[in-house]
Image (cartoon, rainbow, N blue to C red; front, side, top):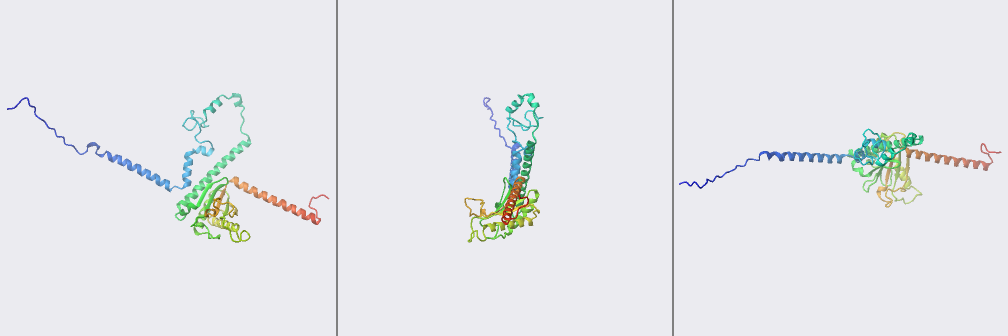
Length: 333
């Protein structure tokens, strides 16, 4: 007999399916990850294949807005607002200024503002001079980047990039080619250039025509001296001969006629590493793309020397004439 007080037991069996909606979600996440990694490695490749000069130019661009870089200024300004430009009033063209300066300007007497005068001619000339100097420096920075890019792009010259030192000095763009222990630029105690030095100098020579600045070249040796000292063939002659040999290679590479204004040999007087004057790095060729100020100073010094020498020569002629009884032109009776 059946018992009405007993309830039937029902067992539910659930069959699980094969993943449902979340089965393909990981594929989208993985695709995003692969895309991000591809972009990352592409960025690393670009950074690794870009010359140091180009990287510096990119850095300078983002550190200094283009308008400020061309016209001068303090970059993004020192106002409290993070928005570049005219501050709260976007129509202003003067850029950001300190709040204290703004308040001070608002409190200025109107009559004194009306009586403000234009900058004097000297101030205008000075501002124009500084603007020209900034443009010239920008051109030299660009030339520096071009040389670095040429060396980096050439399979035969790339191994020597560590021997090429480029920097901007008060005189202009300085290009130094230095010796290494197992890779000298010249034959020992000779002005004969190694083939790779010739190729390097010729590549640089063609690039220097990209600017209208003149070029100065100097040769340097280490402190190791010849047995005869300075009485015979010495480091002075060696450095001068090496400088002139380098000049010939620059010209062979395409350096325009008239670009070179000075070729000198300085022996060991200006070591690159004063603490270790015998190191190979002190043996070098220094090429300076002169800025206008340095070129004018060099020409001015030359004129002063010529005038001084001329005056000394004239004075010696007068003394010789007086000893012989002759009177110089214009002398009193």
